[in-house]
Image 1 (cartoon, one colour):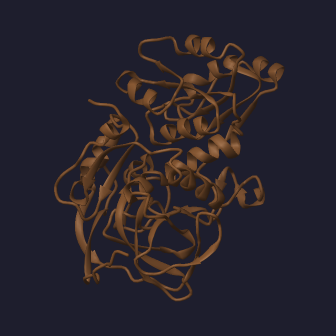
Image 2 (spheres, rainbow, N blue to C red; image 1 turned 180 degrees about the horizontal axis):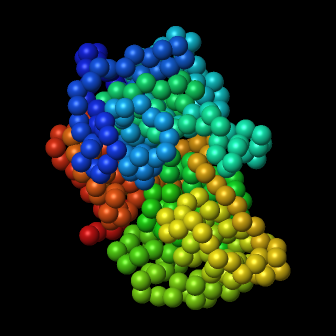
Length: 377
């Protein structure tokens, strides 16, 4: 078992004290947090970026403490265990003892609420009590972080911690969209939009592991890389009329659409769906207001489903699939903590395939990891 050095009195953290562009993110020396009752402290070895980090930095209409440390995707080793925090659930849902040095990944959802089981807790479309590590409270863009023991999931030595971090929020979101909400079955045709994104790259692989035929829509730079993930048909939306190609690839209709784009594509979804088909929406990067021909909807008796993040069971299922090697989150590049603002800027350009990982203990070097996916350039 690897040993951990005793922590110093202070640590480095990438945080911001005002809302704005990537330049507001600064690496500063701060006190190391102490775990309270029911909490553990983690020595962060990897933390991955999500678009959520960009939105929080720009100023979401939520209350957060300032200065703020982002980072919902966290993997590392347990450094200290607070009182009443000695037991956690493993990947199978079995209670196990948690000890210093254990390798763990962190479920970022605090107070997960499933609107399907308890709709009374939701008001005006917003969850009551649901918060995220890295959004409402400080996250993993630091050398140490304190989290509730209930959010800690032990992982085996076979899983690289940077992969564990990269699979975290994107993985649970993709799993819930594909498996829990989309109910994707073997032999079905699945259409994935925005196929270069962190969630979409995982959704493709989850669907293939379930025996689906995957049609992916992406842009020119990423066609070969999406294909390397296992997509059966990859459509370059800049070079092809994607609805026509999708219709040809699924002549009987698409059974499930997993969508993050929204407005520009929805009018075509209703035409492409097979009878009883499902559209699962987890984002709207292209716009929130959609136009539909409802005749296709009611004649074919299709379903429009929303999906956001996922519960503890979804989380363990997603990470378990990564541990088994059924899926692998692609990592576009790694950054040392001191270049966290640069990682923010790169993600903001949209020129990222998969995930960006921050290493709080690395030197000043970022590495491109696309060669592990069998693609160059």
